[in-house]
Image 1 (cartoon, one colour):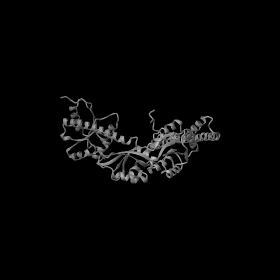
Image 2 (image 1 turned 30 degrees about the vertical axis):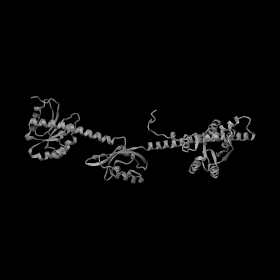
Image 3 (image 1 turned 45 degrees about the vertical axis):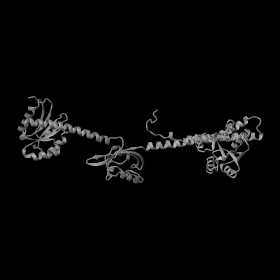
Image 4 (image 1 turned 60 degrees about the horizontal axis):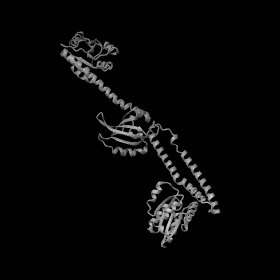
Length: 131
Length: 349
């Protein structure tokens, strides 16, 4: 199984920042998507190729937002092949509570993403073997 | 024998000097020191009764005086009698009329030919006491009527069959703008906006008809000038002259309801501001923090990235500025403090 990193964020600055810091922290190449629908299409296309998708997901996006993407993925029963880190500028506790409803979301991060935070992500039991 | 020492003040209206003499003797027989005033005609009696300096405990009245007789005499004496008990003195020939005179408001009647000192005394004591109770009863009734009529909150009584107003208090006429007479010519349907009537009919149909018929609720009423008001109604069934009617207490809560609406409205706006704080404000701020952190990395930032970073730092700062101006604009539109709501101090501060 190989690891693919998907950055789903409509904000170019957000994409730049995350791309920058993840690369610095030795993450493999990241694929950038402007909204949930584009990411979903990509995952559907490659879902049978033995890939683990690590999705850094923004919440507020046009076309398909973060929650809608999570709902769509949840309906497809492919939980084994993706893991989600929610990356949001929101500090609203209700968003954090909502994230708990999705078992594939293992981390809820308030922007900006920090090195300490990335280290914690790397230590996740399902991911540690890739680093 | 021990005589009654109370200070009775007695008026005897009697034209026959012999009878008058006997009454006086009888009274003095039982009472130590009575004040007895006598009148020999209606004219004389009315002068005495109209004189406010003299207050009587009881009046004995002969039914045939030279200047007035019978029912007319009783009416006239009652009119000026200031509620002093009146005992009619009569002969056998007039006994039937005397019995009927009790209906006219006379306290008692005594038959002259059968009179004894003791019987006269007993009648005097009995009728004075009875008179006092009647006055007390009247006062107590008046107090209850005052509670209704002088209540600062609108109250009315309506017939549960015809829905007609039977009585309304001053506060109701003042608040709703209809006169007392207009109210009595209306049904309770006529103080509601038209669209409220079906709801009211439903409520009326489901109302319990027994004595536990206590009801509380909020309704819309309409004043004579068309203004619709929100009222809190408390009502109960009461017995009134053998008929079951409903008594209503209406509390105008229009101001209070508007105040609560204003608070809810304000709450919505505050929620919106809170949402903006946590979502919208945080976005450019997070960007600023991230960008600055990259610059902090030192010399390994490529030149073209630096240009992008500076441009985006400025953009984010501008965006933040716009958002904060927008919030300040929204906050200034919260108008609750610009309206006066007079409830006294409800904050407890």
